[in-house]
Length: 149
Image (tube, rainbow, N blue to C red; front, side, top):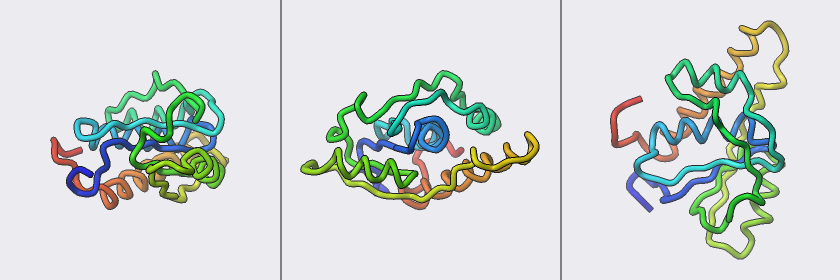
């Protein structure tokens, strides 16, 4: 384990690798990309949600080229920590890491894609998720050692 409890490799997982996990991956790479290997997957794979890209654009993070992956596309045992962001992903992560040293943590994060309303109301839900994830990352792994975000 590196300083601040940051593992050498972290995998973020959600249901479709289109909303919560790519957001967490992008934020974690911005914060800790030099210090850890960071990736994300879904139980299923869907294209990245446009609101995720928009909310990250506001921080100068480009998520437009994110390619969704599933657990089948990676070796779960090669990660020190898997952070699951949906109940479905948590169940899958526990299955695929049985008998491995990988730790699994569940961070319940509401799915902003279920919010209805105007574009602004919907984007606000994604901003809340973004900010919630950013806070959670810093609390769990410590402040990044590089330039501040």
